[in-house]
Length: 303
Image 1 (cartoon, rainbow, N blue to C red):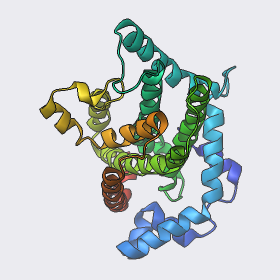
Image 2: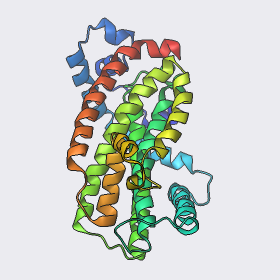
Image 3: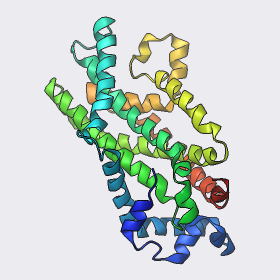
Image 4: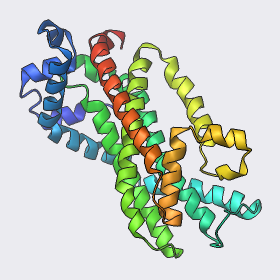
């Protein structure tokens, strides 16, 4: 979503011109001969200097999305919950889907909503990062600012959306008798891992989509397939052994399953698998930042 109004409201963009030029990745940054490590330090410094702009943009993004809606931000909660209710009605009631190892009649609803809470954060970050640079092409051409602010604004907005959804989901769990436990304290860790993984992948795809617009179209299909290859609406144990083993290699399996372990059964998450995913995400995020840094000078010309 264009952010021109946010810059006008801030009124003090570019307090540190050197940092801004270097981090914008334009001709000025290259002319100064900023190295990779030096560029990273300047980028982090620019993020800190523009922290108020980032926070204000996240707030304005949420306001703008529901400016003319009577229900406002409630739609952020209603839409995924409605999707979960439809799946629960069709699969749990009509098809008689039940979870093994539990007699709780609401177990499938909890299982489903827990998985959707994890997936919704991942999918929204990926979807919005895919077109973040294309959607703000005019802004990137006319304003000099640290472009890394854009994915951070998107991540912050998606995180707030997901927190609202998660609070509503937890409220439903409490109503149907699934009381909070100590294992629920794992939720911030799970949210953080999901966000880092999604941001790293989304930033890479967003940069590639600037140069090859087919990336966004392909990812629309990939995300639909990825959803059904992640055990959210079904249990992985019902699948044939070989297929289930392959499916467990899906990073989102460990993440969504960890949400379900924590929220439904009160068990610890898959710590080993999550540790591997987190480390891989950090490495991938470093690669994404490197790709972003190298591609930034050419992005404006292509856009």
